[in-house]
Amino acid sequence: MQSFKRLIIVIVALALAASVVFFTLENRALTQIVFFGWQTPELPMALYVMGAFILGLVIGPVLSWWPHQRVRMRCNKQAKLIKGYEQRIAELQQPAAPEEPEQVAQLPAAQKAD
Image 1 (cartoon, rainbow, N blue to C red):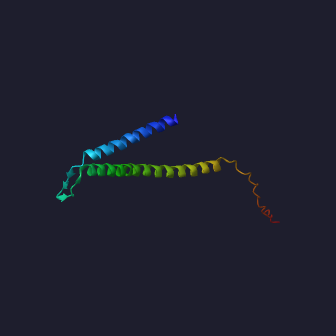
Image 2 (cartoon, rainbow, N blue to C red; image 1 turned 90 degrees about the vertical axis):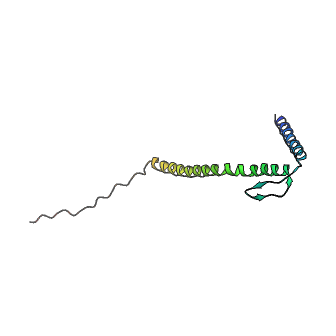
Image 3 (cartoon, helix red, strand yellow; image 1 turned 120 degrees about the horizontal axis):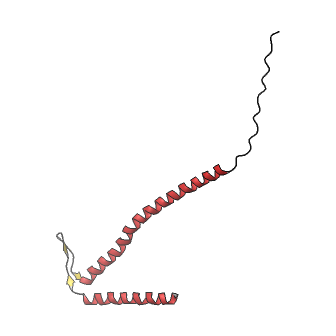
């Protein structure tokens, strides 16, 4: 089963690599992009598209990592609180040590006036 999964992964990776090569070869026309008056140099269209693709591959995981990190931090904080509460419960559930009877102070008896 493992070898079948590896074979599928290799086939998908090769297909993806081949499609990138074919895309690059087909889109070699020089293009200039203008954005709010800012102009880029004339570069092949494939370079712009691949650059946008790579930028998305970098930004996407970073944007999804941040909320997960916040949730993980909250879970860790809650786990610490729970552990502290469990320790406190265990302390309270232990039978109390038998207390020594309090020594009652012997007060001198009141002397009767004769």
